Length: 83
Figure 1 (spheres, rainbow, N blue to C red):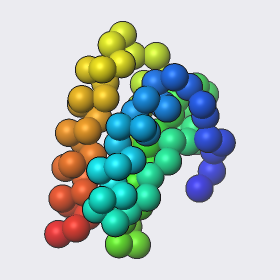
Figure 2: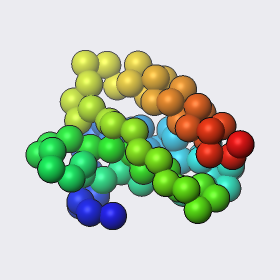
Figure 3: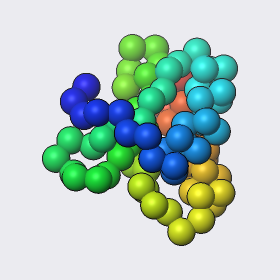
């Protein structure tokens, strides 16, 4: 994967909330810099040999709301990947 792992406050918060859900499903996740998009980040989820990406805002107006929405996105992605 291209891009460097970024330690933004929002990225760390989302990863901290999402990681237990993904690992419980048997997968792995990380935050990385989206290629070609300076300052944009994405959550990378790997499960059963499949990889999916979902964007993360670097500075959301409300981190708690961003985490809530991202958890919903992750649940949907995990359902698609395990089906």
